[in-house]
Image (tube, rainbow, N blue to C red):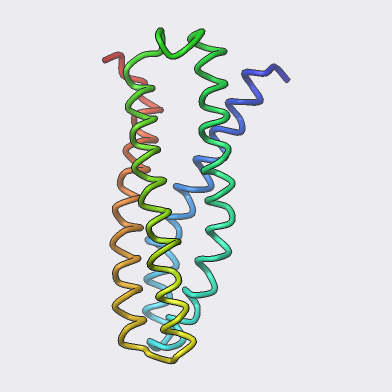
Length: 154
């Protein structure tokens, strides 16, 4: 396997895990949890799901810039000659990472605290905030994937 193939594979898999995981959580798990579970059980579920998923997101957060910089140097011989879409992808990555860190450092502890205290109204409000931020991050992630797939030359 060439260095480019390895970097590209790691890059695609990291993006797939992160964006695909958000898509699954938003489009499949959330509606199923609403349909099958009462509020307290649903909050407990999410308090368990997020930390498990966030381990994988952190792996993606680390792998994406490492593999991305490698790809830039292997494919374009550096940042100066990389096309604009690569810079757009880097900017979207920074925004997604900032939103993820906000969720993990501010919202998740509040959710876990509310669940531990059985403060279901606060937990529901916090979960709603997380849902909005994940929804925004999902849209940005899908846009990023579309940019990567289309490779526009602007």
